Image 1 (spheres, rainbow over the protein chains, first blue to last red):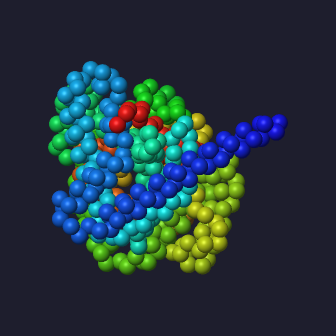
Image 2: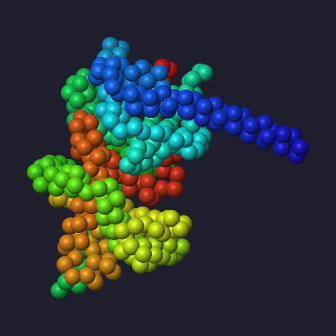
Image 3: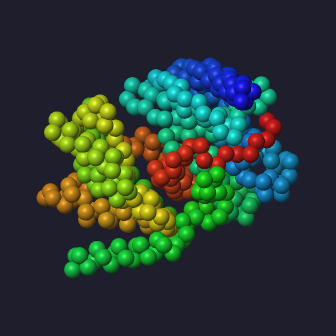
Length: 188
Length: 246
């Protein structure tokens, strides 16, 4: 019994350490993100570069990109096609975040809670400006010594789920052609 | 005659809902809900209606909303939003009773009483004293009763829905204690609809050109939001990508 309690204690303290690590990472990166959002006096190119750096550093871009098209498409596509898709998707992700976040209002992000399920950290936060606020969830995984974002959920809308519906539709319409998907993404 | 029409409408809706699947079986989340392929047998019609809705929005509704947002100070906007939300508390009370959520039902009617008596519903005092707002409607009641969502439909002017939720809206229209007891209920319906449009104005502007297929995006967002109202651990159960080494 005593051993069981000790084991529970160790496990609990381990998960607490993990949660505090991810909280620490989140505080740091969200502050950096806010700095980018709130200091947008530079040229469009300069601002875009800041977002690019942030996305490349903190997002599991390959996992998201591949997850959106699914294993069937990955298996039947060539390395070159996949590499082109990854580049185009990365640009698309940066542009989307840039367009959604780049505004003239000053925002703040508050960490509310961290939950862990199946090795995925679910960080609940709140983003607010002087007019309104919204719940913002981040699904994060640990890769090596760093944390990477695999999904962002604004209120109840998941980026991954929404894009997957859109991409699947394009792929189905074009009989699974990755080339057609790349063309469509480039249009935006 | 009107009563017969209600019964026929309800019977058709419920029969149709029970025989139609809400999803096909692709990419099912941990909770068993598929977000990948939503049952959408009348997609071409829905797409045409969505385009029509955007056209009407562009030429008529959006200019009204933008002008209103420009003129009305934030507290006025908030007050109007609270007013329309408060009018829905009695129907929420009824919905919660059907769902067996009696505490929430009491909370809703309590909120209505407090907010109506103190500010005609324009200020949400009830939330300040611990009576938090709980969203629900008859569509949710039907879903909790085991009725599947049925096919996705886009309703002219109103927007995205599905057969179950639309049936819920029809039922609400007839049983809502507020709108059934006021003259010119159409004005309240229009005002409430415009208010909902005002509330999503900024989001709508942001997503307008952010997608390769806005029809799919709106459909997905609609279902995600409805599922979030139905599932306990919605955020935890959303599908996630398989991890690849970066």
